[in-house]
Length: 409
Image (cartoon, rainbow, N blue to C red; front, top):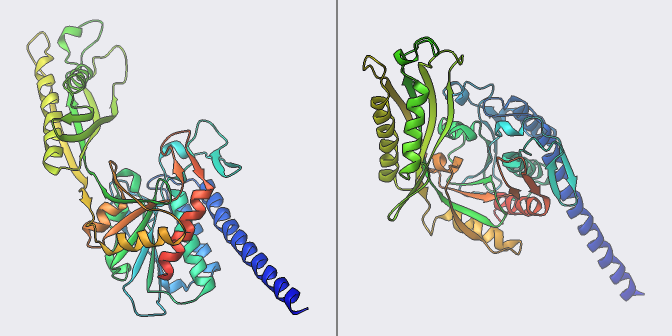
């Protein structure tokens, strides 16, 4: 009798454990599906922030421990919400840890209708992206925060941060109110990729505004009197492309990228366009080479402006503006946040993979603020594309890793 009773008790424990794991996965997955449904491009994250705020309160958070800063008043885009932060007092003495993920998505994700098929989530509308970049990250951090509130148990002091406007130059992380974070010593950021991938460094990015000025004239009656701003811009972009300064840039051992992403100008076909406004970018892990890419872009536009003349020999002009969106960084091989993250990945049976990103991350600015930050993935694939999808198996693994990091396991 005793043997059988022991076996029954053991089976019951296993069943309860399996059920708890299933419920945990379900809670996390319900959160991510709800977050995916909320529209919120850069500068329009208020709906996402409201949802996160409500979920924290439902889980038992103290309203006084939740704060929204005024970063959106200093960003390039004047948004409707600042960064949302939640601080949780530690139950044991240890350095404060921060878990974070940005709230905004790119415009292609507006109108997303998330649908699940097996373990994969996609948008039902084939013309929209899913927005798993970075609503999946938001869900990982929110799930972890609410579970720590519900479960209790020993843990170090914790800060949970949801920045705004990552997709337009890491603006939220750049302008975050550091005093609201509680002086964390190490941080973990969830963004794109597999759960076992640890991004330890990222490129730096410089954003340019190029104002091309020509001379207007009637395109049919007196085209020779005009100076086409569109022609100037076209020649400059062609020059960059033909000389290897647009797209992927490889000059000996030096690597970088550039892109002319936005062109605006012209109002009618019967007018020689006198003004075109362009937005472009230059990226490289090497700050010196990034400045060289920027110089080459400016040089191409200046030369093009001299080439386009009207019948009186008049030419156009170009004006430049720009700012460093974020500087490149690379964590030390022995950085505590990196080593702790690797332990957490191994703790769930994974094998951590270190990676360097050619895009910017909120970790760029957090590390620059003096908070070393490693970035982890949570199952997003094909970000910024209509084929974007979320692998829920990887997402669940990311949630387990986050819980280990938050509990200090």
